[in-house]
Length: 500
Image (cartoon, rainbow, N blue to C red; front, side, top):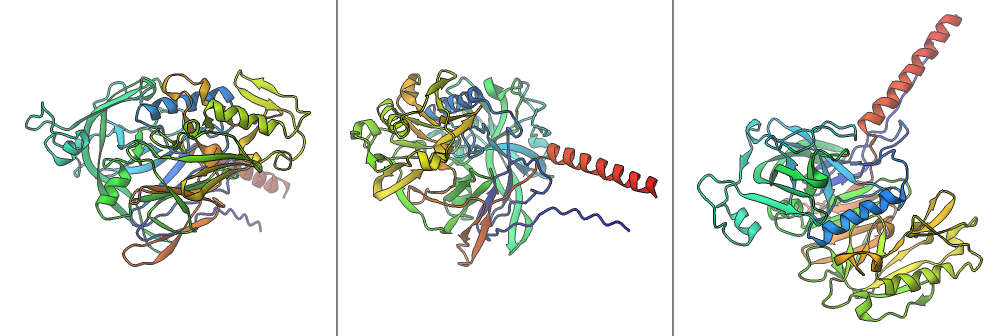
């Protein structure tokens, strides 16, 4: 008698009754890493790693960050995510349900974009297929019994444009147009429909739920968003600061607090994304710079090991300037030339015998056989309210073709508006719980094990539940692995039968 046991972990560690949860997905190469993301008051979105299995490429990495910065500085961001490692180029996307009956859509998760939009049936330039192993779907408001276009004379349209539309006529839908700094654009009209997700109904229990949201119906796409994009998705889900973003719509409806948090696991590649009041771990907060479209904060000092860099306030952008941009969708970290040069010099001077070389004309790399944490200093950024962010050598150094490369980048070499900007991406945000408190206009973080769990509070009952990290295998990878496994199992059974 032969017994074969195959187990997949499908239980979630985290629940929250009035907190929305999004689980980061890392596409695993093993069969045993399937875990579902569970949330609270409003739900679950299983987030997937967009560039899973792709060979590491420094040029692709820099190209991704370059495109993203153009969009950020133009007022539009690219998606939330990254693998938590500077050599793992990647974005994350979520599978959500829209409409009645519900259909599945794969959308990028974006902390800066202020609207959610999906490609629509009218779109001629929209992608029909994707190399990501997912099936793309064009949204058709006529196929949903709960979907309706948003009229141009509705209050949402007034608020979005800041004034009534001058050419608004009866039965005209509220239009939208986003033109990104890299030349890409999306245009269409707003619709209102239900978005499907799982709602936590108790510990380790979920029930199907939905909520009405206003989002864009993309009728025309260009540039990186059209059919020429091989890694195409159905759209973007925005978690920006304006009233039109998903987090703002959920908060204004009273379903959640206007707060969210993410924790990118730089070791295992997964993480946590939760909407709601995080009560554990405790996080020290620093104020957001007022009147900025993104998550900007004021840096006060830069420390390398025990030494502080000799910097003036105008160099590190305190005051009326933009400040430091916190952006989990950028993989590396970009510093003004007057910060970058002394910082890198301090790091390299720790090992005088290093043979430093430049890779691909922009990456400072070297060979080193010892422990980088023992051989190089920590880098600490200081911010208002005595908040600091410590980055360890194993986080700002990453391996590439037998070398160690420095993840800090010189924004003084960037072009146009990106020149000398201070932008901190996954390089410094990984392995930290980052909390965005839009109700109090503050942001904070703490070092954390992002493969563990956090505690969030139900604002209605005061009940506290766990929200944990999650991993999912991509459909294509998972099916392929199971196919190989079952094939080998059948062959083994065949051999056993033949031998008997």
